[in-house]
Image 1 (cartoon, rainbow, N blue to C red):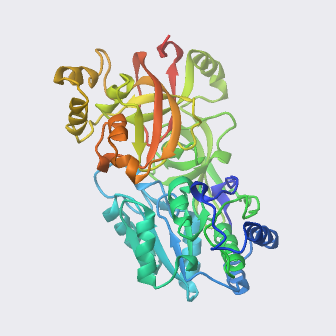
Image 2 (image 1 turned 120 degrees about the horizontal axis):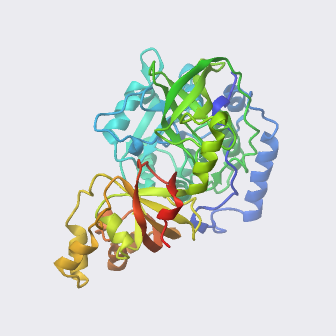
Image 3 (image 1 turned 90 degrees about the vertical axis):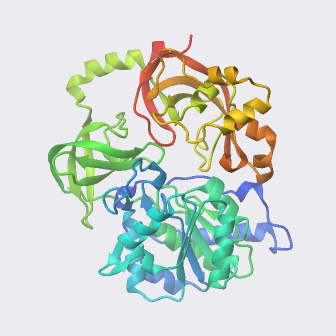
Length: 487
């Protein structure tokens, strides 16, 4: 089997780490040095495995194999993440949500080859009904869905420790019998590895080399060692991505349906036919940026396995012939990171009353403390319009003061970039912190609405004037006029 990464691009490289600084005690392992040596040996022995090595060869080489292989869903098996789908109707498989090519390849192999190992899902999305429907709709063969391959499925919000306790009981195995794949190293893998589960970080989605190398590491470590490690591209010693065989068509007009700058990939829609094409940063001209919603000119291609991909030629009608206009525009604007927040919290933050932003996903984990970030005000108000008022009233604010602090100034409106702030430290809040009045006051939310990923906000200020702009999920890049920034 050819295990091609094709359009997923180069792997992310990060240093090995123990989850949340946790170091196993001497009672759970022979010694830290011995385990580190075992990891190194596993990396060395598997470094000769090329991307064309088959899953069959890997499985045949294992002395020890996991009893349960567990997958996250969002940005691990499929993309984009469900929270990024801004629509009321359920997303459609292979139109709104796509399986990563290598994930489909692995699952098709799994269906065709019997194994004593079981597969499972552990997801904390709040879109459970959508996720379950997609598992039924994605197929690996005629009449066989992705969900049919999963022996156990745990989909609900909250700590993944709860998911894995349920999987342990349902599968009748120990944590050390499991292997887990997830794109979230900071929260999910940190928590799960602390249970003693061997974890693999897949920041750009599941790849077959991740699976093969992680299975080899499992086999090496399983002989009496602590298993609570997080594997990544560096300590897996993964080889470079394979090259793509390009078969292009004529240049056509397209629209960027979704693009993730941190993950460096997305999807482009042919505006005439409606067909979708995968696009990776390597297929975008050097120095060119694309964002969700951009108009582009691209050439469509089909890779060796029949999957569509795009080669971007120009963005927004600006190509080399329009270089002068683009340069003039660049002199008057500045590109900055941005994120979107609903009212009334956008105003409360810029007025210095809300000082911590929390999410269930670590949105700011890759943003260095001290970075200036733009604040975009979303068009929809936050559903709970009472809790923040109760918290502020308990803190001594009058009704009139709350009204004034939570309103946008004259001339400012929703659907605009309205302020700039400096990001402080990001940390994972304990349950005790989230229940505490101090954090709830800084977030302006009750316990159940305080996310686990907390980011301190400092030096927030209003822009000189608002800038109409389209919001996007997560942290993204946008351009604003330089003279809009506070003096």
